Image (cartoon, rainbow, N blue to C red; front, top):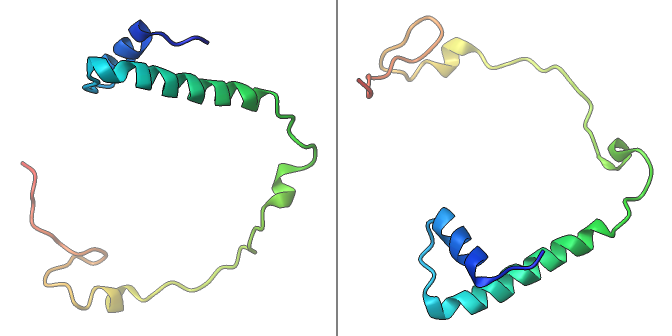
Length: 90
């Protein structure tokens, strides 16, 4: 994909960026370089195999949770299962 001044100007308006007219050439060159790199990634062949084999997953172990009364002990006001906080949104 080729990038020109009009494309950079259009993208800067979409992104609400204030790119000065003397910076457009530099932004065009940078965007062209980024898109060139992305094109080069298309040529990379992924290695075969199971993608989950490379992940180190931990065992799923069920542990007891904390006591709710102990967790809510420092609350100024609470219901049976949750702290009560002041309403901040009308």
